[in-house]
Image (tube, rainbow, N blue to C red):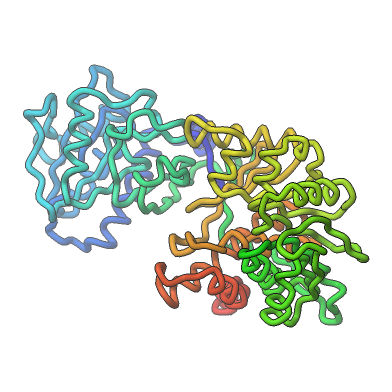
Length: 508
């Protein structure tokens, strides 16, 4: 699934009207009918009070159509018009007349705070005040109306996008945005649904197919691509019947320092679980017994130093290198990074302290191997690219960084976003239980393991992030969010592979 801008959706509407030879009013009827059917399937005629708040643009027109359809099917509906301007869209006016013809009375016109209705907790609020065409923050009594609705314990359902939220531009006034319990968005989700500062207003959403022109979306470059199971199934590279461990690469994990050898254990184990043929861990001497005991499948090479990594020297060429997990910031470690970046020609996954060392030693930036994969958490990212004004500014800064250094950057979060140049890939798997120590080490191991198997760096990133999140979802299903540890995510990778094609097997 793809994410498009508000402007692109307006172009899609125009293309649909032209190619399908329908009116924009008919398209609105089609869209609102999808919302009605969604509600009708769930309410099944229940007499629950439904209060629809309509703006005076096309989003309000959707609300008016919905109100009319619900009334025609016997629902207990009250329709309000939020009279916030003298301007009205053509389709709003057409449907304003239509609902009056059905109900034999006009919707309730709201002009000030005095018109705010009493709302009970068992009511359903439908938000059709503002849509993706909003270009300024709600203010005055309309802002107070949104705040009043937010204070209500009634279930709040937003049409297309919660009122006050911009589809693909920064949040300007968080006090003027409706906090929807559920959003029914048309054709494709909006970028705001996936960013930390704005996603909380959406909570949950469903995408309703309203028959917009398919060809337009196929030919139009999206803002971002959503990575879900269907995409991950296409990314997966199956094993050959006569394959052997040499066919699936030799992952090299450079990780750990005194007190942080666990990072090496987690990333090494994850590389194995995701399918690397062989994995060698390079650790300080203090990590030797731990690695050999914990992961007997791994080969272990130690640094000459007891507690930190000072020089990485091996007598083989690995297929991929994962570096940084728990290595610390010793001066000798920084020099080891420089040498490794200069001398190695294989793909890198760069994480944790390797990123911190790069941030503090800018000459390392010039040595960054092209097509490296960087996996920073928010703090590491800020040290790497500088502070940002908002989520959109952050994305632009990461895009520029990625393009300048020709690297993949993974922005970790509830919806992890992989950035490669100006391309954005939004991950759909994962859960809050994965916010636990070592989860990032596991991700670095997963991606390194995929690289070692021959996955392209970008493919390894988006597929690895999805599989890591899917494993976390499986672990959460078995033990709940609070109990998940990084090791549980790694152990669940096996089930994630099985789950990846479980639906297809069921269908057969």
